[in-house]
Amino acid sequence: MTSQSQLLEQEIHKTVPLSRTLGYHIESLSGGSIQVVAPLEPNVNMHNSAFAGSLYAIAALTAWGLVTHIVNEAGIDAAVVIGKAEIIYQLPITEAIHCRSAATPDISSEFLAKLARVGRAKILLTVAIGNQSEATLDAIVFATRNE
Image 1: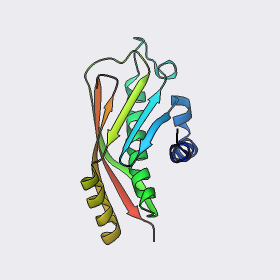
Image 2 (image 1 turned 45 degrees about the vertical axis):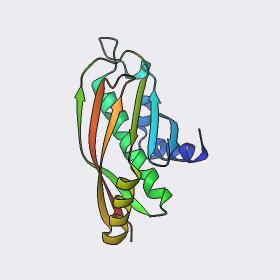
Image 3 (image 1 turned 60 degrees about the horizontal axis):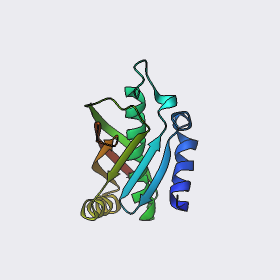
Image 4 (image 1 turned 30 degrees about the vertical axis):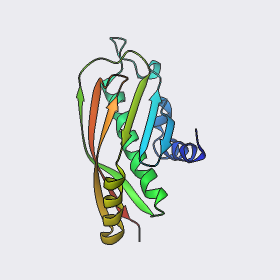
């Protein structure tokens, strides 16, 4: 884990204490991509598969983390929030929970340019959940520049 991912993970654990209970851990973080893992054990339901609420929370934190990283890398002081997120569950997850998301350089550049120019921007991200994309979360993430 790079120092950037360590700092971001610490920020997430500090600002969203539930993330520690979920076992949220950033495996990799680079440019416009993030990979996260959480153990099944604290997130298990009565069917011995991942609890839907845990999947949603871990995926939302993945999207928020990626946008926060993109904004921080650009040196912009901004508040990042999930404006809307929708999840589709296709298959149960019975192992560690893996989430991954990426923003292309073009999408990231457009987002950052608008944030710098207007002071507010949004980006649409998809988070693949599970080793075989057993679920997906589509999130609209907003950033508002702090004045």
